Figure 1 (cartoon, rainbow, N blue to C red):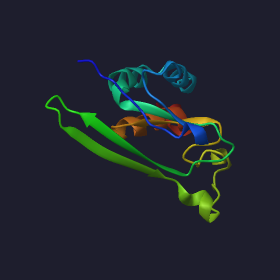
Figure 2 (cartoon, rainbow, N blue to C red):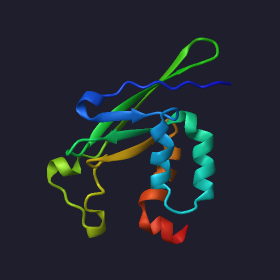
Figure 3 (cartoon, helix red, strand yellow):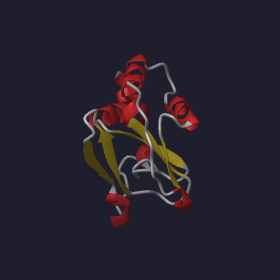
Figure 4 (cartoon, rainbow, N blue to C red):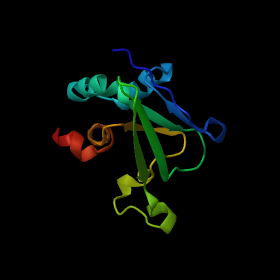
Length: 139
């Protein structure tokens, strides 16, 4: 089965989507996998056709976005699934209690990327393995 992923982004506004066929995808993935994490690496390889990075090249934080996944089935029908993400705390003036979380509470920080998967559990596991210091200590 050959999979093809296409993306429409807002590159003129500094927001781009890196699909698995984008040469930057593996580089972005490697930069986030700082230690040898065989379980995560295997999971990403299996889920890769349904994963993207959303890159924020601006000086502003992204606090919300919505991705629309359209999967063409073998029978020609399209399965559509929307995925909204929102971290509005910064808009209401909330600050992290834990100082280690300062600059990590936005959905996508300036000049950084966010990993997104069609399968929310893959994203949750990826984020836990790459962002959580506590999870890394006990994993």
